Image 1 (cartoon, rainbow, N blue to C red):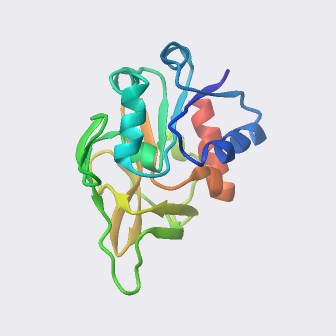
Image 2: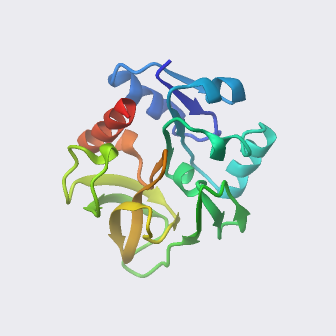
Length: 196
């Protein structure tokens, strides 16, 4: 096994598995704490509400374990949001790897929420996860909540205001966008994660 995908109940599990298979990675979808702890890498995907996702992690006994993992962990979309302390959605207590709060994206006439579509990455600093990714590369977003840029931000995207698009805190990374749906750039990010 190259990576454990946490079964967070999200609808993107199959597309994430297919993306990893294209990279010849062996992935297991699981809620088994021992398997997750032993995995060389862990993916935390998520689609839906922070409240429901945290409830599933709590019920599986994973919420105390996840912040203590020492191997590379990548949160995707809602999975990235769950790495923060809290979300305005609910409001919800999250995993607390990062201290900030995830907030609802303000809607405007020309900027509907949820934010769905392609946006350009604005790189803030280099990182192994972003090797081969260029300033301005397009990635695919589907979300209504986001974190503001902060000390952990590796890349931003602009949707009315700047949003944290890629973050890192120690061995925890997150992408607000879906790399499994982001064609070349997304495949490169997943391949980079498999090498970390």
